Structure formats: C-alpha cells, structure tokens
Amino acid sequence: MQKGFTYVKPISLSEALQHLNTNDVIVISGGTDIMIQLRYKSISPTKLVDVKDLEELKLIEEKGNTIYIGGAATFSQIVENDIIKNNFPTLVEAAQEVGGPQIRNVGTLAGNVQTASPAGDGLLALCALDATVELVSEKGSREVSIRDFVIGPKKTIKRHDEIIKCFKVKKQDWDYEKFFKVGKRNALAISIVNGIIKINFNEDETIKEARVVLGAVGPTPKRLERAEKYLVGKTCQEETIEELKSIVSNDISPISDIRGSSEYRKHIAAVNCGRYIKLAKGGM
Ligand SMILES: Cc1cc2nc3c(=O)[nH]c(=O)nc-3n(C[C@H](O)[C@H](O)[C@H](O)COP(=O)(O)OP(=O)(O)OC[C@H]3O[C@@H](n4cnc5c(N)ncnc54)[C@H](O)[C@@H]3O)c2cc1C
Image (cartoon, rainbow, N blue to C red; front, side, top):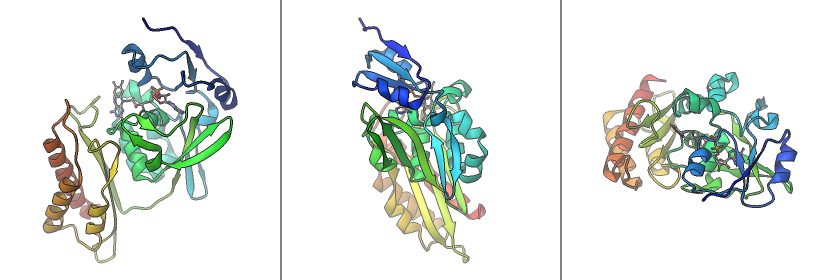
C-alpha cells in the first residue's frame, strides 16, 4: 500500500525551497506527469510542494537580448504571450501541439523539461533554442545549458533541493523555422518523432546556417551537426534533400517501442527533414 503524503502550497519561492530538505519531497507544478506516477506508484513522496502559482516562476520577460521564461509558465501562457510569439515561433508551435487544452492549461515548461521524455515537445523547442536552465536552492543559484541538464530519459542533473526558476533564451533571427511532430493521432498524441528545422540564407539563396534537432530518436533530443554542416553552402534542391535524408537516417539510432519501430522513426525523421528544407526555400 502506498504511504500517504502531505501537500503544501507555499506563497513564495524562498518558502518553497525550505521544504526541499530530503529527496522524498517532490515539487509539483501542473501535476500532469506526477499524477500518473502517483497513480502507478512509481514515486512515493512524503510531501508535494506545489509551485505552480508562484509569481517568481510565472514571469515571461525581455531584458536586452535575453528572454526569461518562468519555469511554471504553462503551455497556454506560452502560446498566448506576445514576447514569445514575436521571438520564438517554434516554441509556440511546440506548445500548441502538447496534449489537449486541459493539459496545456496546467502543464508547465519546467515540468516538461524535468520529466525529460525524449519526445517532450517543450524540451525539444528549448534545446533547439540553446536555452539555459536557471536552478535555485537555499544554497544559491546556478545556470546550466539545457543540453547538459538533460542526461537521459527521465534523467536530469537537478538536485532534490533545487527548483527550476526559469529558462533564459537569447533572441535569435532565422529566415525560416519550423516545428514538426508525427504522432499516432493529430491530437493528444505523444510524438513518434518530433523535430525543428531552422535556416538562414545567403543573398544568393544558398544556406548560410542550419539547425536540425530531432526528438524521440535517442535518449535525449539530438542536434544533427553533420546534417547542419552539410547544408551550409547548398541550395534547397532535390539532390541536397536526398543527401540530407540519407545523413539524417544514418545519424540517428531510435529505439522500437509501442509508438513506432526504429526503421519507421528513421524513415519519417528523414522524410520530414527533407520536406521542411524544401519548404524553407519558399519561406525565405
Ligand atoms: C493526456 C496527456 C497528454 C500529453 N501530451 C503531451 C504532448 O503532446 N507533448 C509533451 O511533451 N508532453 C505531453 N504530456 C506530458 C506532460 O503534460 C508534460 O510533460 C508537462 O509539461 C509536465 O508539466 P507539469 O507542470 O504538469 O509537471 P508535473 O507533473 O507537475 O511535474 C513533472 C516533473 O517535473 C518536476 N517539476 C515541475 N515543476 C518544476 C520546477 N519548477 N522545478 C523543478 N522541478 C519541477 C516535478 O517534480 C516532476 O518531476 C501529456 C500528458 C498527458 C497526461
């Protein structure tokens, strides 16, 4: 039988941090992942510390060249926020594709990142933005690149006494950027593969810079650096696309699971990268 736990709802970040003194005390935000874990008894906390309404964690603000996105920002908040809409369209697209409206209204970006699912849509978008994670504890704060923060499925380097306060993202300019997600259904589906393509062009229509990041093709979202390098100097023509598809499928080793086989994932990852590079030309 599962032991009982207490539930607390602190009114400030500093009060929340005081509760995190042992590793069986767990932070809860929207609860969309935690409630499932409690139900299936894969966690047995002694206390849940609810941080979802802490003002310090909900802020979305612009300071100079950096945008701060509070850890407790919900997907709905991200979709509606003008700062995010004006700067990070692929984060908006990813947030729009998470679950259904009920999940988006309560599910948070920090919860998505800390859950560290290889298919996490918010996690993928933040990886493609090279976000920095700001963690706070009673001992102070530290900043970690999101790539170093997530180390495997359901694994991050967050200590039990830390809370994700916010994500810091530098403003960036891309001529074309696109989030895509392949799931079993159009709505409420976890990705079989998700990805983000970003392109900057030279004046002569050759590619100046590319970013290709895929999710659900390995333990953590994967940046395809060989594909990115290959694209530089190329135009979005058929032979570029065919070679890109071959690089993508060679450079990923997805697992087979109930959502899709390894071969299917390789195929749809390659096809979608090719499709969106082709569309990038028209998006200039
Ligand atoms: C029906 C359904 C559909 C879904 N569809 C999708 C989907 O399409 N795409 C997708 O990516 N995900 C999907 N999810 C997963 C889920 O909604 C997300 O992972 C969500 O973002 C988790 O956020 P939360 O606030 O609910 O986290 P919680 O469940 O509250 O917490 C999740 C984890 O994060 C930790 N945590 C939460 N906030 C903080 C913080 N500020 N600091 C430190 N640790 C913290 C918790 O301790 C816990 O370990 C779906 C879930 C359901 C139930």
